[in-house]
Image (cartoon, rainbow, N blue to C red; front, side, top):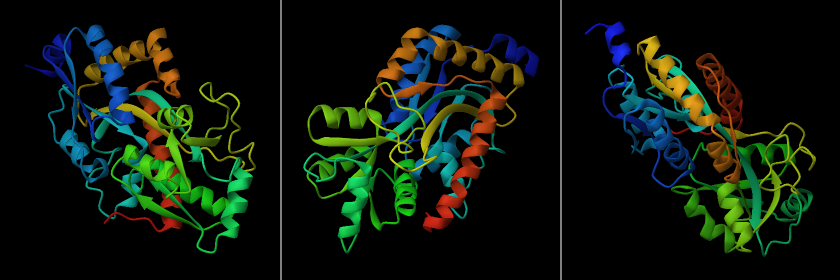
Length: 306
């Protein structure tokens, strides 16, 4: 069967979305919101397959080696771009080994502290840090995660010392944060919403340039005195290099329709995420921009995984 024939009958069997992180995380949640609606658009089952390991390395390598036929789709997020600059030998190249398909959503973070902390604002937290000889501690779900590097950015901008404590996943950070063993964290909005609602966390600011619907009264980091502070995670989809263009186009059209559905948009907004449908070239530009953006941060923080 030639490429044109394959594209004409695509899809004719189940499609897998490879999420290179564990089940239950934000990326997994995004994929599981999208997959049933994508299945309805394409007329075939769309299965979410988690392949965690190596901070996304295992699943990404697996996807890159899959047949370029449109039946293996990689969910790409900012941590995969960070990996490319954090690892001396990342063993994959998002710009070489994959074809862009579509953007999906953008997720911003929330600076949180334990509810027992003395800090009620970002300024309070900075002032508190400067009274502590050893500085503060903060946690994230992995070395090189957006939450980790957000803490590095904040520490550099505030002129404070903060020790990063890596955990195995964001949910593992929560017990030590709420107990006060950690001083702060840049949490995902779902984690922050849950922590604030339970009275265990206090939110100080959001990491976006604009206020967010989930925390309408919470200032941005720019409003708190950190101009241009805007770390976030972008999520979208890619397929292995050399996938026929008509198949990538079909996937883009279907994903764009799903992201544009009011019910899907509302679900993402309730999770503190911004729907962000775009064309393949837009997603390609976003990925390249993420690689360029985080390179200097990784270098300044002397973060490496190899």
